[in-house]
Image 1 (cartoon, protein in one colour):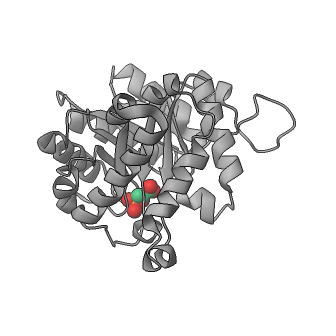
Image 2 (image 1 turned 90 degrees about the vertical axis):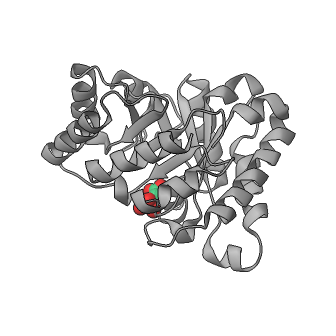
Length: 258
Ligand code: PEP
């Protein structure tokens, strides 16, 4: 960990119901009372944003409300899509783009990921751009080139003034939801190289401020060692974010490793 403030996101994916989403966020809020030195966001499913957001507001919590996705057009005939203005209206301040499940299950290509990333940043919101290699790409020795390409294409035409609202999540696809985790050394190596790409794009000052999270089967038991790496500035947590005590333990590990 470094002077960058750690950032932990809980990506609830297509899980929870209204009642369980409410009790999950209450558990997170209770578990984090008094904890400082870390940014935390939760990403509930769209239908529960207002419910979760109002609990966060009522409790005066610093935990931020995030959205798992957004469409890049401002409004119009896009059945089923959700705009950034709608999300902002619901209290969302940070949006995921390029998550591997959207890339590889829902079929989002680089053009869509780029349009979404640009739209989130143009709208003045914070963006977490997710990148990461698939298993075959790793086995072919293409981890760094895949990450570089996804970072460069995702950030095409994004000006330097906007990147203080950007976080990158390095999430090797083979590690997401599989119980397999990148070793701390492998995560550090990939994330150091991603920071080199950011330095090439935006210069050292900007690149040194951009947070790079690790995601992929992070648990309370492996979080501390991962977050201790100099270029690992926190984590994007899927499965372990669905149990408040596990998620809180991961947030605490980020503070301990900072
Ligand atoms: C994710 O959803 O971004 C993720 C990393 O999931 P998991 O922690 O379950 O691997």
